[in-house]
Length: 152
Image 1: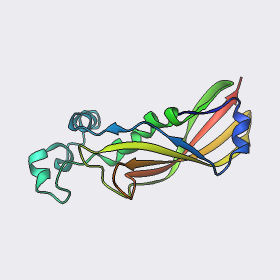
Image 2 (image 1 turned 90 degrees about the horizontal axis):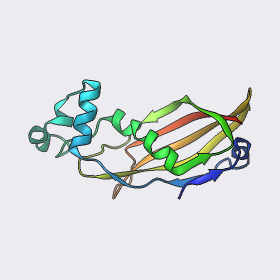
Image 3 (image 1 turned 135 degrees about the vertical axis):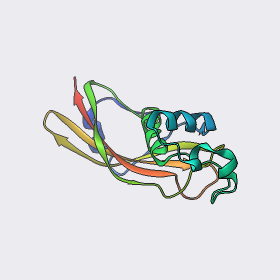
Image 4 (image 1 turned 30 degrees about the vertical axis):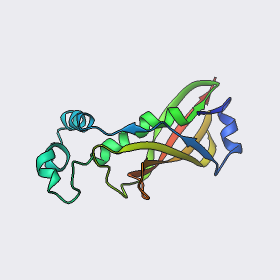
């Protein structure tokens, strides 16, 4: 269920709170292959199932940057800020890839509001998103996303 903030200033009142989870999605070889095509990263560990089967992870794994890019899919499922004239992706900090995401696994986003402050004309929020891997203790990615929300 999406956590809704009716106005950007409400973020200031919820520091430290867990915001929720996105839906689970499967990581299929076709998604990995499309990412490889889009980025030109055709390393065998990602795109050669036969060779990867005898590699260190026993299967193809998702690119780290594919796992990071999925945060853009997950975040709007987790949090919605209303009353905006504009929302801007301002960047990210502390990107880590503590675990591999094997083909055939399922992942979801999990988010926590770790910082919020007033900036000129709006609110800047830092949301830590972990890309959870079903059945695994360690996430595939942890990133502190920074967004700016400008009220209507």
